[in-house]
Length: 430
Ligand SMILES: NC(=O)c1ccc[n+]([C@@H]2O[C@H](COP(=O)([O-])OP(=O)(O)OC[C@H]3O[C@@H](n4cnc5c(N)ncnc54)[C@H](OP(=O)(O)O)[C@@H]3O)[C@@H](O)[C@H]2O)c1
Image (cartoon, rainbow, N blue to C red; front, side, top):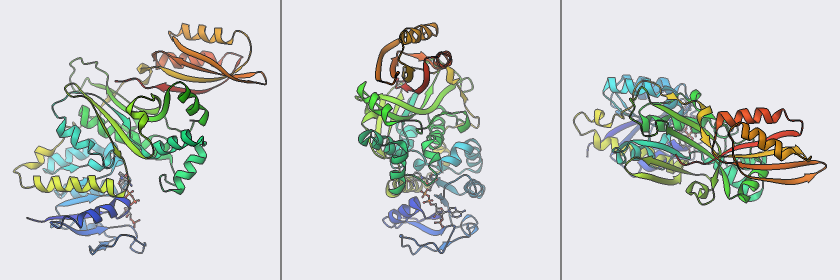
């Protein structure tokens, strides 16, 4: 079998896994690896030459495929562009670069007759991208929804199961290597937003600017929220969604608008998303023909992510023999960014936890304010009366987000209200 010659940028968590897996695929020849610091102690042993000069890989005409597993926006973006300019195929795990620069990168790949493979960029070891791209290619997609960040799922699982505060659960995740020293990419939802942008491009043909994605992280979630949610039959998860807002109406790609968002969500305990614990990912893909597909598995980690990277290389290798193969593997993604629907128009039920004065008429006033904003209450309880203060927990029926925000603004003007301690959406199938 003809050898495919590879060059790799990065020998960290993912790169080390790739080196291990490539040892089982001798016809894939890793010619050189670039790292930042040659003196760094490494657990991976490889006979492959290692350099700090990326040009030795990008300028080497024998290297057909650039494997980019260094991460971050720059200089990774520049290196990927230079490799495409030199007509090298790219296999990347870099969600940030794709989400922020996908339209121009795929346009460049098309122009140069090469292709970009990116299975590892979303949901690590789960073959989600090839499933959407090829296995489900006959479908019009309605929604892609899921738990796409293992770190936050690990933290929320530990908070719920062991009653830990957010800060303690985060510190434990950091000590175990599940969370970065700067956790903001994970806990503030940026990582999920990048993945949603890529999933939107695959499912709806256009990337969504990460800055246009409604994003709320998990920092404000408390053990009290998790315990109360459980009492009502729910579990709180960080859920990301990209959903068509056309309700099945025929629209051109230009008119298509997507609801793309990531925020904590109460998921019914009986729903498959609620069963995902620890650092796993779970994705629900809804297509008009297939209905709903559920995929669960490791969303990160050295070997699971390398499994996706090396799977891409193997697909690329077999396709390289086909005439005009790059056009076959080009995803049908346009060069324009997608429009996004106003977050005010999102409709879902809500879970609210209010801290109030324990005085007569409070529940009546809340009911009146909600009624004025077309919000219907499904259930309301009062808890923890102490020193004249009480906690009120409310579950609503479906409500437009703009109406809920207006009602909460009115509520905050009431003298009996100490705070809206939590306002969390409840899962609603797309
Ligand atoms: N970790 C996961 O489980 C996972 C899962 C899915 C996707 N990903 C994605 O995979 C990519 C890599 O992640 P990772 O966790 O493997 O990162 P990592 O452990 O931090 O490794 C990054 C590697 O890139 C090298 N590097 C960084 N900047 C460089 C530069 N300017 N020039 C040359 N080499 C440079 C580093 O060199 P040194 O070793 O010398 O520092 C290191 O070997 C990221 O895009 C990430 O989002 C990771």
